[in-house]
Image: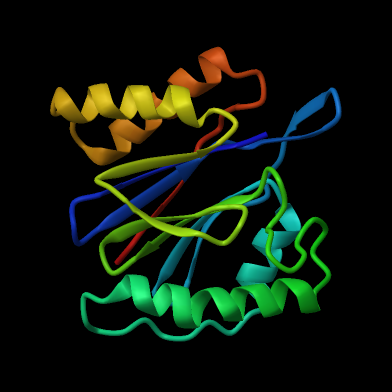
Length: 181
């Protein structure tokens, strides 16, 4: 019930998300944040509002290294801390080895975008990325908008979310934005 999109120029990161929430056949607009910052990290979350709450308020994340070696750090240090916190907080669907079938994270750190999948796999993305139920439509729009040179990045993300909402019943405005410093 979500679409989260991101863009990076290699130093600054912008994430945006829709405001849809739902259960079963119900869909509604929620003020709950799907994109937010925690220290040096930007997060976009789909699938579990509880996961977002744990990330925002209940976890102490390690500081990322100053070097360009983010992938080893994320795999060795970040993911184990995330897994332990989610298990400790009994986040529904989060059990050893899985975040839950429809849950994933778009992570921004040090100018890079990372997709954290349901099995905690960490994959580098960029210069744009999308997660959630409307991701494929958003990816298509992001590809076309990026290739066409549409600026600023906020406009590209807004249009990508609009494309997703036009063809995905579980994606709705208003759009939420967060930018790295």
